[in-house]
Structure formats: structure tokens, C-alpha cells
Length: 120
Image 1 (tube, rainbow, N blue to C red):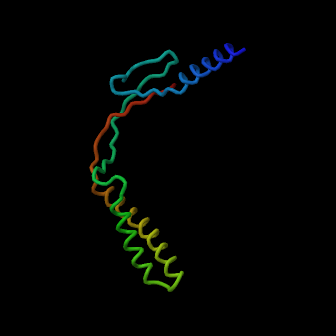
Image 2: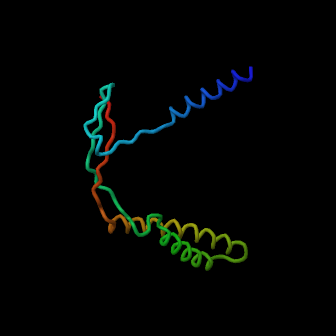
Image 3: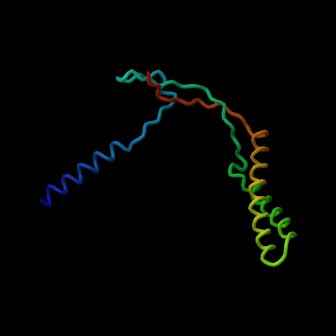
């Protein structure tokens, strides 16, 4: 009983590992055909490259500081604390959005060759 359980467990692990693998295709595979009639097709695609600050940390931090300072000017007591936190959150979101818009206008655009498997 113990041996058959081990064999069953080992067989299911092997089967699961083969299903979980992913396939990627590159320019060297272009034109490759498969038995199911599918083939690999590659296209040139223009993509945005923002190499300086892709996570927009500078805009988020600056916006949070400015928003917190402005929020601190409102209310008194606990309301002042809540306004400071709300101002920092709103300022961070606004700063991130502003930096993202700026990066989209000034970022580098490059052409990449992307390949995918196409089914009939």
C-alpha cells in the first residue's frame, strides 16, 4: 500500500510539472509550423521605454509631500491629521499621474520584434 501511494504521488508530480511549462517564441522561430496547423508569426512593434524612473517614484514622493503639507493647513486636532494623510495620498496619486504623462511625452520609443503562435 505504501509503495503504490508513492508511485501514484510521483506520477502525479511528473504529470503536473510537464503541464506547467510555458513556451515562448523568438525571431529564430519565425515561419515555424506545427502539426496542428499553427505557425509562428513575428511583427515589429513600437514600444515605450522609460529608463529613468519606470515606477514613477519621484513624482509619487513629491506629490505626497506637497499634498501632505497642503492637507496640514486644513482643520484642527484629529481633523488636521486626517486632512494631512488624505492630502498626502491624493498628492501622491496626482504626482504619479503627472510624472506618467510627462514620461509618455518624452520617453524613448523603440521598435521590438515580437513573435507569437497563431492558430488557424
